[in-house]
Image 1 (tube, rainbow, N blue to C red):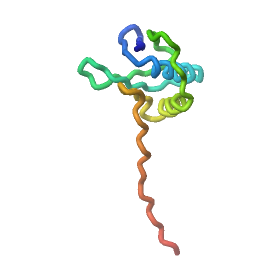
Image 2: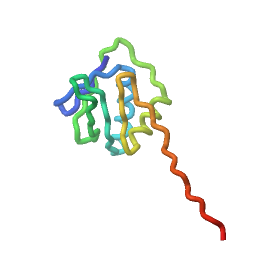
Image 3: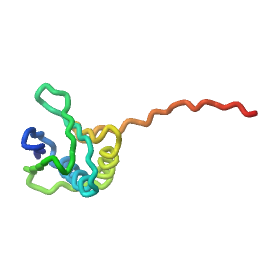
Image 4: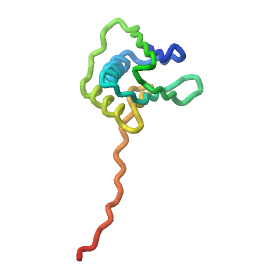
Length: 113
């Protein structure tokens, strides 16, 4: 179990495997000067916390596991995609939240002339 410390004010316990993937996402987003919203589960009676991840905010990731987690490229790609979306990246106790299916709106049929 690792720990994410945000601006020396809040800390969140996150599985080392997920934290290793999040580290890659944060590193790549900030390298591109792109901030994003990150939602994390909280155990203290709060459903979730929303953090704005940006180069101006101090962020520390601590890993406590004995082995380096294996990186799943597809998971990193999914997390990057989610972080770039309107709702940001949502982590759950089990990993990342599933991406909701796109809402389909009926297309109005235009009569032909």
